Length: 150
Length: 108
Image (cartoon, rainbow over all chains, first blue to last red; front, side, top):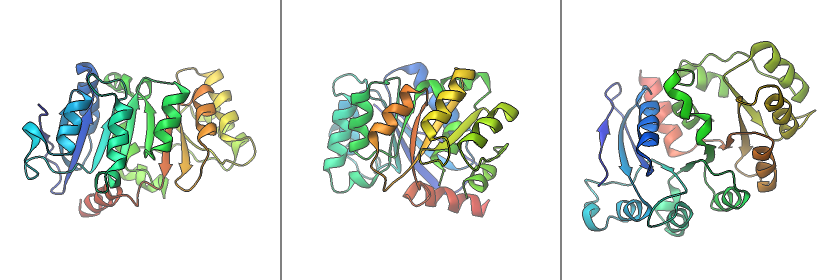
């Protein structure tokens, strides 16, 4: 079951879905996001099947009010049950969900993964090694900066 | 635009480079935590800039920026092989998340 957590500094809320199975990485990503100035609701799904249930409002996530479409999806690729690229394919095949920006956060440097994610029009593809050291303090806030580039 | 977006988030932009040679020189002089490199950089291309920076500092965080309209996936693969930590497609500011962040920042 995904769990929401709320930031408090701003009134405007941003809904973020993190799809990640490794608990340590979930904590680091949430930690980076929670340093940002904007208010947000963060949901976490621990496998690909759960992420699809969330996005398509099925099963435990049937309520669209309680589980609205996120404003951005941070997607790992190596996921239990349904692989991240399969999740991505289903997102991009849906008229509404395809409008949500997806940023892949992964340890995979495989060309096939990079190319397939690129073909599926992801907004970004970031290797976890770029920010997983955020606990050292060196890169606090990297993720929120990256999310706002333009 | 990028510089002001980052500064609004309390990031210190140490410098901007006008081309690839300048980027490598600025990296050496400033040693930033993060280097954002336009893949279509003039002079030394973005891949070569990445290669040179990562050769000097293997833990450097180089992230490629690529235009939304560009179709150059092979270049991205090459950039990651050269040591880049990934890519972002520009402009993110026109996306819903970018608009919402900009709105929140303007109100703060």
